[in-house]
Length: 227
Length: 217
Image 1 (cartoon, rainbow over the protein chains, first blue to last red):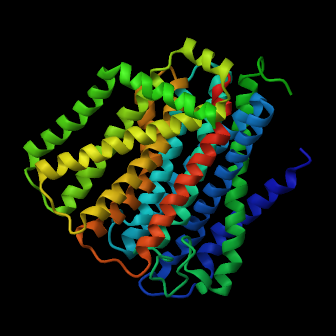
Image 2 (cartoon, helix red, strand yellow):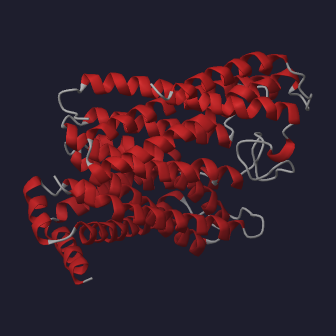
Image 3 (tube, rainbow over the protein chains, first blue to last red):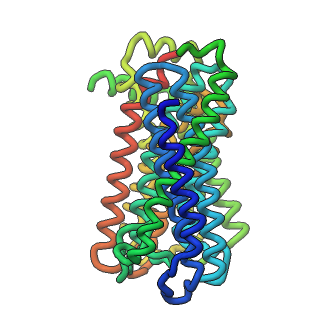
């Protein structure tokens, strides 16, 4: 409980996102108008997802190195929260797309890649469900998790840069071609002031949710996990 | 190196002895393509390309799946006592790549005979198809190893493998459009080919690192 400060930071950052994010004056760019405020919700979801999945990868590696079942539970809970962030990212993206591109889903390469990423991690959950032996499940799932992560990164980092896209950061990108997440250096100074706190707020929230779920799981498996 | 060759020889020898499985896969390829021919006749190049890769995907699942699923528990214990996991997985990777290359060549021949010849660069297409078969077989070999642990469940292999293979499959479909006369911007072809080779290398490295953990029971 000495680590309370990061929970407080999380609450402050998210309060800032939900109040200042809706109140500050935003630049009007193209047809985005006020929908640009979605930037504080949609983009942090992807930062959050990558952060959580990276943590999950870390714990899977830790499991394979130490064979401590606790780490496998950590990895699976972080991956599950990562999936939730991915789904929320898709939903916020689809709503945004409706008002700027005209359709909820326009088969844009980035929408496809994001949906595939969610599918990959759903497969991870299915794999865990299909194994009953706890040690074997932990081992096989960790192996798949590590493998999936290294396929997932090229999927969202490299592929989107090779194709035309409606989303900012495509290959043609006069504005920040390169970074698939954002329009590069085009971020307005006041928006940046809210954006980075929002990113960290959401990531911390993801970790917080996962840590609660991990505590429940550890209690459930109290008889087989020591420490 | 010798051990890898011995393991590989064992797999190929088994293939010779148990010809029914090998011909089973060949029949699978032939009948799938024949059904497509009955359904579509001779489609245009876009449909041809899409059908070709989807057929490769399903053939790969079936051809590669059996390489692991045919090893029963007892035989795995035997391999465990006589060889190292790294040799074992490398032999399996080479073996499934060989089988898959053969299947790709057979499919190209059948596709051209039955569904017409829309290529403008046939040799290029063969090269890309071989690269594709190679990439597919590598990913699915590791998936088969994982599926073998999940109660020998072949369905789980498709669930695990399909989302993971999509990036490579999309790149391959894009790349093979060049064989149908689509023009790419300068250097894009080389870029995609190198990216695919890079992904293959990554898959092999991951397989070699991760397989030892799957192996011990």
